[in-house]
Image 1 (tube, rainbow, N blue to C red):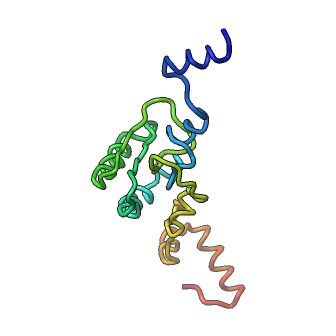
Image 2 (tube, helix red, strand yellow; image 1 turned 45 degrees about the vertical axis):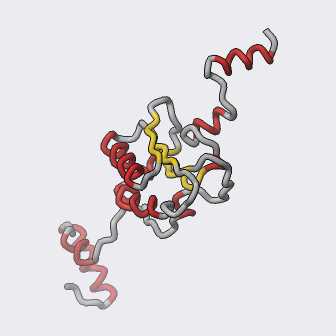
Image 3 (cartoon, rainbow, N blue to C red; image 1 turned 30 degrees about the horizontal axis):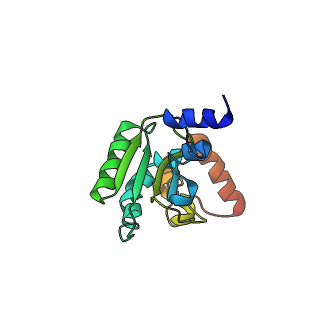
Length: 165
């Protein structure tokens, strides 16, 4: 068979895709169509789950069709949650069950090229804090202080001339 025959054979059986690696990476779409790509790990965080309503609201006034692709490898409770919010915003949501990207868990895109330079969550929503470690107060830390830590802290405070307490 010639190269053309091979290509026609793959296309007729539905196996041929333009840039299949790019489409796999971006959950069956092209990089040029993406507004926002959220990594698989970030999509599983409580911070993204909590902020997803606000994230989608950011795209409410966009006149073009909006699609929300959800990696089927995410936990079921999250895929259902993200899909429901997408449909609540009248966006077309889709959970992908085929082998998907191991890099992205959520992709928000349109049906034509928009060529945004920055599509990562931290670039599009820089105010969204994804640090898993919550801030704690000094008082909270002192409440969990062990006896050994207490002795060390008191010795350091005494050496510095500070009061313990």
